[in-house]
Length: 329
Image 1 (cartoon, one colour):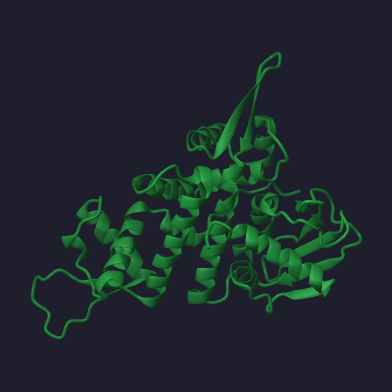
Image 2: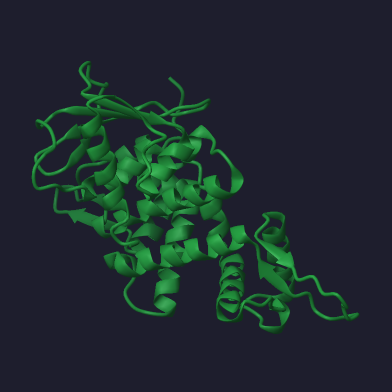
């Protein structure tokens, strides 16, 4: 059996996790929203050195997110004035949605202004670091407090020392709770704070933006296992849409896709099937990564293929989407 590997960070999330790049994106977006014009960034410096600013501007330009203003009579030595491209404007709006999510999602933010920006920065940094993301994914799939030994096994091949450093950081950021157990000898366990689960919407929103502006997504851009491990506990319904225990399968199609994920209907919501897939699956939803991104952000499920009980499949997709976007709308 191959050793498990750490989850790959979402490339759009990794881009936004750079605070200087994000500050430039916000500065340009606010300028265009205010007066529709370009801005000479170096005349309105962000909290970074001129060299750092120039490096990030090059990144934004290579990514097709900004363009230099074309002047019919350019003046020698005049600073370059930049403006967001359509893709850049949509990315600016996307980070605003992420900020709204952070501001509304409980412990992700404790106050307005700088505290919200710091909370978003920490959230993006956590989702952009492979080792940190591996710890979060491992904890998200556990039903209760988890021992360090279980985490070491689940996060292999990440070294134990690296794992503990990430755990300490996540505890400091109030993403993870450290529980000191009164046993003999004393032991410690860790629990992902439920207030952090809405962050699952961020990589889905990023994938949706990517699909709209850069074409079809690679199959591994939507990690249904990791996404559902975070999102499923947020799904609740008053009346189960099928008998408790009914199995539903979700799958991303395409080269390099991960294995299908099985969900089980519970009295209150959904649960992930941890063992082997059951022989009897009531319904199956499958589609490309782009189809899943559209289905989980918008109400478009027409690109997904349903087999078996179509109504149950649609109900499940809608329930997960509603849970993911609770703090975005």
